[in-house]
Image (cartoon, rainbow, N blue to C red):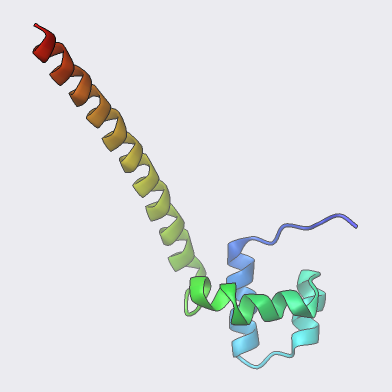
Length: 92
């Protein structure tokens, strides 16, 4: 059986539906997941990471994480350049 990838927006939506009282079986059928998967999303990982989030908040979080990754890379590059320049000056 091919493993289907569920997007984070779909996880948030499924968790919201479950919180609002929709029965577990219909949610699992709609998303093509096992009930243990929904349980894990709800209790273990999903609640901590996605609990209380709306889809637009999740999108903003992903954008901020990507921006943070890019800024860290820029900082690392500039730090390396700075160290190289310091080394060059000390050799002169």
